[in-house]
Image (cartoon, rainbow, N blue to C red; front, side):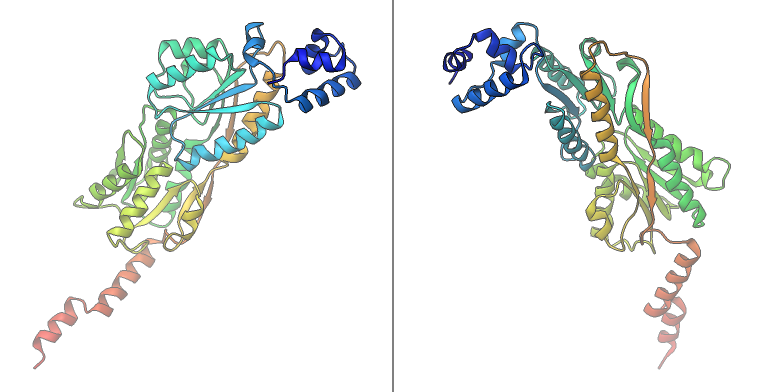
Length: 360
């Protein structure tokens, strides 16, 4: 592998000049920097980042800590951040925590030891004290979730307003028995979404008839089992609001496998607008979340902070709104009642069955 000495020897200049040129030192002319870069590329020179970091330089790495890369919510954010940071000369390093605060802390230790330029984190419910200290020593920003112990810089979605909007939609359709299935209220997102559901029902008859299923972990299996429990109630809900992407997948799988007629038997409002949700059954009414746009805005803001020699760590919060997309999975109760009556008549309701028994 070629070294800075090899580049210097070929160009007959000093090694220090090569080093300054490759680090874009303004004391070296643009023409010389370009010639050095061309020769370095020709010889296959790769900068020794470890040596540079030993001299006090930061790496061009930015860590991204997310709970689960399989969740489209987070993979979309990771993709947008990667493109944004790459354009700014930084490389994104993806770290999966599984919402385990011990794993989260271990990733932060590694990023700190690698002299990462900064960290973008979707925090766990209760980060360890060491994690708090490590993040305080690096440039960092919270994404999608917010934990007060980690500072006041964050980019998030208005989760409370989003679920409030979904619940109001069902109330407007005449539903009074409305269920909610969501993630852990120990997380800022889970707590805000549950609060949005309760706020929308406050003062209505539906508030007395509502049923809730919340708790970790947020997964498709949690969605499936929660739906089974809600529908087994003596007075099951006629509509449900979902508070996570993975839970939405689970509920849709269970509804399909259990032959639940949507929206005749149950109206559903999902969370996030994955491509498959548009094709599922009658089309899923859901909350479209501006995750890609939010992540890009976060990345641009973070790049500005990285390139500022003396950043100001004043409180900064960006909140984006979700949009309700109405498709075929929700229906007004009066239409549901008419549909059920038509099905009963077509299949031979109680009166028809009695008439058949009396026929000779």
